[in-house]
Image 1 (cartoon, one colour):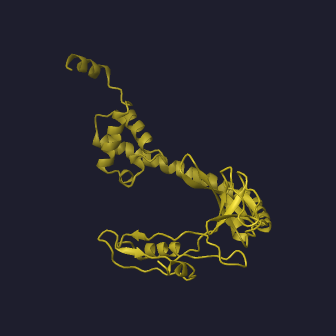
Image 2 (cartoon, rainbow, N blue to C red):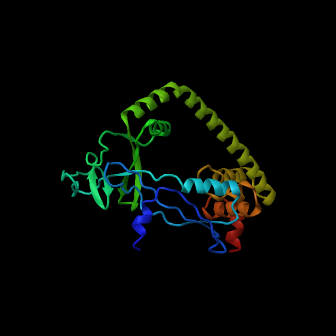
Image 3 (spheres, rainbow, N blue to C red):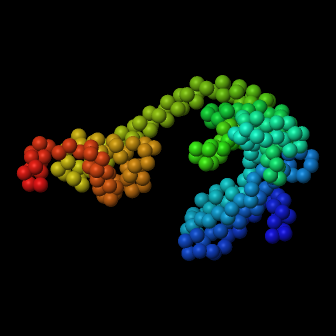
Length: 273
């Protein structure tokens, strides 16, 4: 495609919707954005974005949010070197493992040649600090590193300006107590919500299986309703207390060997195998 490079340097955002498939009827075609870093040619900060498909039955608000998300300017990405060999394609300095580099036209550039050496590294881990430092920085990049075990790039932190980082640290120090109190209130609210959900799920299990002991049904509800567990109790049907979700939770409880039958039932199983 001879016009591919020309189309890639368009700075406008467009989203076209057209029918393409009975299931995926809305097709968003997003053009790639390019952000100039040096005074030379614009530097490629993202590969060509693939076509995104979504259902044609989405509400208008959700469709608008999705289009706005797809139209966001791509982030400038800096890579943390993991291989032993490599050098800057412009100045020839050797890039050691752990050094940062920027890829331009498939060639590595050190931060000095990419005009990013004035930025400082902010490790990931503090969400408030990262968000504020990025907002106060005139230039910020995302740092990723390739994980050989997971075969993917993982985010390591940000490169931000010193002034932006200093201002973000001041803001985080000023409202640290307020954010800690908010986290405590949110934790109590989640704990109360989980308690109410487990109680309701226990009642649903007892209604579905009246012969199940109360303590056993409580254990089933606590296990399947554990937050962030990915079990059926945390799914949409589980939160709705549907019968299918209750059945799956009980079956999983029995299959995992968590159910201990009473002695008389074990005796009958030995007499009548």
